[in-house]
Amino acid sequence: MTEILTLSNGCQIAVNTPVTTNGKYMVYLHGGGFIYGSKNDLPQALAQQFLDAGYTILAMDYLLAPNHSLKDILTGIYDSFAEIKETIIKDAPFSFCGRSAGGYALLSLTAHLLQTNATLPECLINFYGYYDLKFIHTKRQLTSTTITPEMIAGIDQTQTVWDDPLLQRYVLYMYGVQQQQLNDFYQVSEQAIDDFTISAELLKQFPPTFSTASTSDAEVPFKYSKSLKRLIPDCKFVPVYDLEHDFLKQPEDEQVQKVFNQLATWLN
Image (cartoon, rainbow, N blue to C red):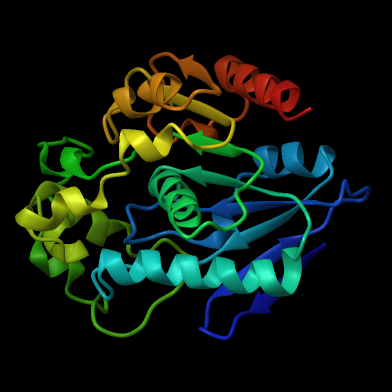
């Protein structure tokens, strides 16, 4: 059963409780390049992994660009987590899971907790995330369709937005990638882009991490997930081969099943 909670800042949390709980929480951060996406996109197969292991899932929305700067998005995530830690998690153990941009968000949130001497998660689960923004300037061919300004004209880019349940902002993300305008959408200057890098020194202090990505990922370079094996002392890396970026959309694939099985073993 899923319950929707609204935090004081307007963020909504989808709470999914297992039949038999282990008293632990799994905080989930969705993908979407910080421009589109929703707390509701947690794949059922992955959610079932967590529920079967006894975790209560807390799937978080967060502010979206370009309506909000990346700095404000991350600050909002820090604030939202602080509230659910105080009001829901309290002294219980917790872990983080994220996909793509959500992977970057969970690494940033963990770095923030380290820097503020706060309680750290028991473990991190990174699906094809990243730890800096340097790749966003790389020319990437994610679709053969050319996105025109007319195609994004009807998408609001000014009002507060926390959730994109129908993924209507996907075309805006694709436009930003094609036009190499993500730094403008994030309101991050060329001079400030390094400010959003999670340093190797911080990563050395991270909790145990499970990392996975596809060798043929055209959206986020494979090297990010792979290199966490080197940067985080206790990191299990499970590569998949020749699948799309968001391979969790292919839960029946044999390689994805292998990732799920290894994740289940790792969690236990």
